[in-house]
Image (tube, rainbow, N blue to C red):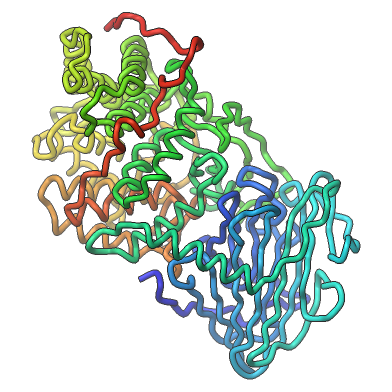
Length: 636
């Protein structure tokens, strides 16, 4: 379970010698810290080698993970050979404890970010456990994503580093005076040495020092109190709670937005070009997100996320994007950072995401699914939701025949992707359900006819009768894991022979080592080169599908295989590469953890999310005002 520490193989020394390169750490060798505005990655060698300040989407001040130590990091570790490294999160918190064992003794490094109240801060406490251990601490800021060397000087009682719009300030340390950015000292049993690093604009006041021990107690209390609100499933409780803590750490508290991952540039293909920025919010994550939060009893988080969603989207359904910034930004221009060598040479490193303006038909179905699920249990007519469902249906009615980029944001040619057409069916289906459930003054017959038209086309053009499987897009031969939406959305029942055949095709064609690929990259449909790992969320979807097909033993076996891939502190990246037995992609990945949480509830038969009452459900249209898009008559 995630609360239990695991011993990991340690480097021969916490620091490389002068003429020796430090060993490259795996993506899963990292743990997560967070303050509900941004997050840091801490490696098992004691290095914080990724951190953006002050927010998730800000420039990185530590980018060594995507380059070299010269691109910025903060490392605290023994300066002598390390025999063993153990680490764990303290209870149900994001307080990381890393224990280094040497021949002369042992020390514990306690890392955390106080929940934001004023300036962003990172606190690091070195505690002597036994004997004595020589320690080296080195803070090496590099602003502007690892590019800019700062000016280092004394600033109002702190050691500071400033350049451009960024300032980092260090308090504490091993001596009585100002802490040095690089120092060596001995830690003995019972001794505790604390550092506090804060961030501010150089033209603002230097953040005041805080009591690190008091901050530790307050941070522990916050996370334990928050975790106590979770209603975990009857089985896999520890696994689910750790995933929900991870999702909470990916939350931008001012808006309620939840980033897909707190990182950018970590590769899906080692040494390749599939390196994207995931510090944004994807609309397609929203149904999984709301399902997970409501199943776990985290109603306030679900409501805040819904409000962010509504604000980001605005009043015109036809202008819906596939992703938004954490404050609802629409323009997410993609830029390459040429000075970063990339994780294990994976270049280019990108910030921004050029897929933000793609047309992806599936987002309308996903959004409609969110809206309907949010108010399905209402006894009153939820006007905001029904108006929004009507607007979405009108847009889909006019565009469902168009080709798109598909759920995976293909950068190759557009196609009539089968899963996208199924999502169009979902959008119309949920509007019909709303008409019927709430007895709306709307002619359902015309929409029922359109739903049947979409259904018939998918079953004729997106289905290969010779192979008894649905296909990735109309006329293609390959399959795609997104086809699992067919049984999961209710398009066809799970025991339909065509669904059974599609699941069999996915098992035969997309499951190396028993885990699910999104699709076969060698078919070049995505316009990119290189091998992809198995996509963890898709593997959880297959477990969901097994469960509703009645293949419960297969569902449980696959779920348990997947949770065994988590790292020693319970975290998952986007993908797993069986050929290298390692995680790849941005880390930790919300999509993977969302799929895990939902799957755990489904496997324990706790399937139905708790709905938000209609008077509390926040949906588009309630306050749309004069700028809201009018509802034109449907056209098939």
